[in-house]
Image (cartoon, rainbow, N blue to C red; front, top):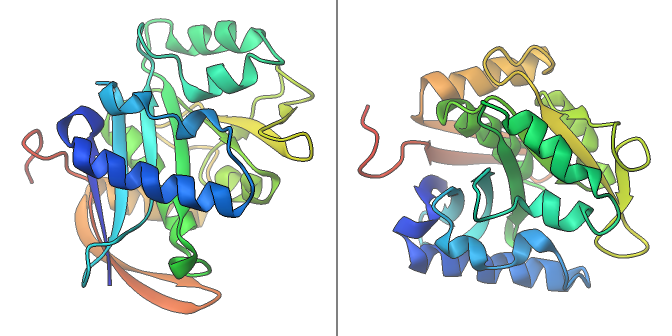
Amino acid sequence: MLKIRVFRAVDDLESCKRFAEGHANVLRDYGITKVTSSKNDWFYNPGAYVVLVETEDTGEVVGGERIHLVTSEFPLPIEEAVSIVEKRIYDLVAGYADNKLTGELCGLWNAKAIAGKGVSILLTKLGVALANRLQMDSLFVLCAPYTVAMCQAAGFEIETTIGNNGTFIYPKLDLVATALVVKDLTGLSTADDRFRKEIFSYIENPVSKTIVLGEKGETEVAYNLLLPDREKL
């Protein structure tokens, strides 16, 4: 069984380091060394929240993701990444942050040990659920072509006002990234019906177990979306 827990980055530096090491190893396997979401200054960002996937038996970190809230001190990873080729990203994020709470789902990864088990899809849904529980108004994501459809099913829409209809060459010259955003985290009106129901089940039941189905069969996952010492059932 896998266990998923959530914490604020500044509250658990050791777990941040374990997350970063696992993420870096996966990126290296794909020949990627320069990704803004893999920089480690987020360890000290009070607006960064971490979703960590661990094995129940050994406690090994095998996946995760983060949500970064907009703050004055820490630009969102998507701002740092896209601004290299598209300066309008700053005004775009500022517009979403105008008297509202926005941020980014980033750094999603899973180890080869759990590849094909459907964990990435679950993390995407849990990320949207966490954003809702954090009372965010909108949520950005920058993703690879093969994850665009998955993100759209979770309520993300391609942000066509920047780049080439929302796409950019990043993080390597032979790779394309797409910028998307959820504009309605309260009702998830743009999400696929099945995804919407599942996401709301995670919102309403923040501590529970679920079964995920992937190419390699079923996996039981115990998840806890409550922030330690900050939320109670």
